[in-house]
Length: 304
Image (cartoon, rainbow, N blue to C red; front, side, top):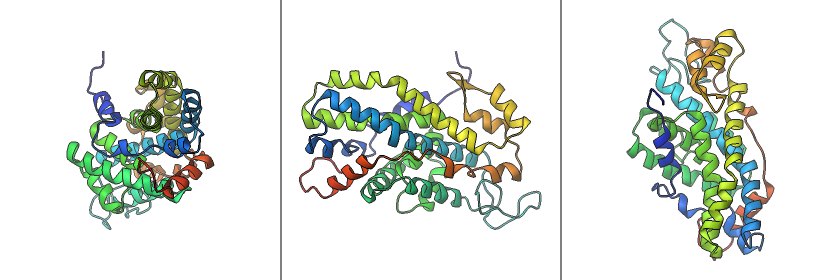
């Protein structure tokens, strides 16, 4: 039995398709795949979902975990007035946004740019920003926080969906693993639900397909957090000990251990975000082509 509150309940709310954030209006490429005859039944759908999880799902999971980690660190160590030195007399570090005196919006712009670089299709970029903007607007009403306000100011055109999801997850009390799990889950449930509506598939059969993906969902969330740990945490006895002794989820060290072990000094702040360019960048050209084709199709049920 756990002895402290967790984000388990918030995770369910974030991943619920009934969350009023517009997710139900996006098919994740399934509508165009159905139109082209790529998805005609449960077998095709199963292959589509597995491929989507291994590419776009993993990328969004890693970005959501990174955003959650950044939001948690920002909430724990809020920046002071931009342009001022910190309490130790150190100059502001505008490159990270994690230390005292830094521009708190800067790291959010950097992380959002990482999401942009991993989204080749203009149509997918626009869909991601639309979903992120709607999710952030909803999350600011449900889980109000300065972190969400900062993100909204940092990316006024709308942060990419996984960035908004990770920030919302942190504000709701979730850890990076839970944020990654929510992103991975959403990456397959949206297309699955769309296929039911488009092809009239048996909902029980489709949910069986999702149940079969449960181990792959766990693997994707673990891989997302592992990439974050490897790239962000500097090597050192304090961090290594925190990872070994910190809280775990199914045997995988959580980023809460990183936060407990990371020293509260300028070196830790500079390390934050230094590994973002090395986060997973798996591409899916077929999904890009489906998104562009869907954009140009005048007869459609879903926004994307």
